[in-house]
Length: 487
Image (tube, rainbow, N blue to C red; front, side, top):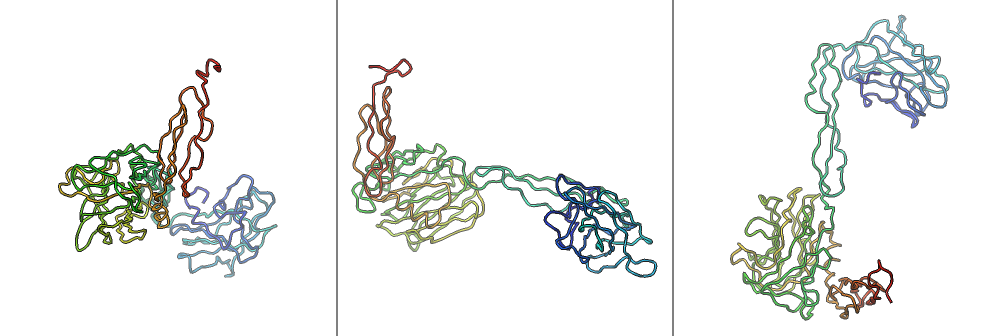
């Protein structure tokens, strides 16, 4: 035991007090500032300390010590010894009169007392059962003997994986195994080939950077990405049209031609890579076409499309990072010539794809963990290489998020583009203002060089149609502040 050939998990007991451990019940073990040795929860003669030898061993004797370290002295003064081949059926060591032998134990904490057996026994398990003690039961022990048959060294099962080294993007995790016994016995061979440690790449399916975008697609905000991530879109051959709540210029109209589309760049903030949720409000006037595509000509990509089968279907396609494998989820329920709240999501952790209609999950598909092909720019309405597969109709309130939304989150997100308009603001004198006056959008105020901002640097359009702050003023002119204040 002292040499570590018997692992801690092979040392067990009837009970163990919280101040002690079976792992420290090895001869000469001393732990700093705590009890070294095994001690039970209850101090009585029914307690035992058991050693699983891992194989059949010719046991010739044992040795014991009392408590090592700690604040008080304690040791076992006598004990019985039991042995077993299977851990179920036990035999007690007997004396020369055929009675259960009681072995003499320790007289102090540090001296090791050795007791040799009158006759060696073959055992796979040895059990110490204290009979008398000083102060309380505390034991450190050793089993003396030799392996009875050839014992090879071999690997244990792999242990559990460690936690991923990072909480976002890609990291590493490891697991370990142990060669037992460390040295082969009785002419055995070492079958521990390979490494004791294994490492693999891991991820929690979350990007480290802020991921996502939100475009109102209306006359106020146009194709501005109001998240501030900088992926503002550009339109070609589209028109402003009535929105989902009847508001004027509340959507973009796509004409169903190859020259009617919207381009949205991807500076990395739309590369969700792992989990994703895409939401849009659509008013289809034709039975097929691409609503939203991470564009790559006709190659497999991540996309939302419409198609006519027995009824109008909404299709969520998810390609892997290299575009070699694509999985589809197809769901009915889309209504022609009417506004539809549609959404699609993929949960990297669970491996599931979902399609949503009017906030209700209508179809799912399991594909397992997959890094998605979201590193490309986005195209709405028409994609090069798709031929006559063109979207005709209106789109409003497009949203992309870097995680899989819950039903409650889907419901909240569908209200982010409510037909609420705040009064139009003007830039402060000697300053500029960026942004629009649609619900949930935040405008930013910046003063010209030589002026400082007096008031809030931004204001958000609120649910009641009012701004969260007033337009600030730009106070000046201070000129070059490094040369002193000007008059």
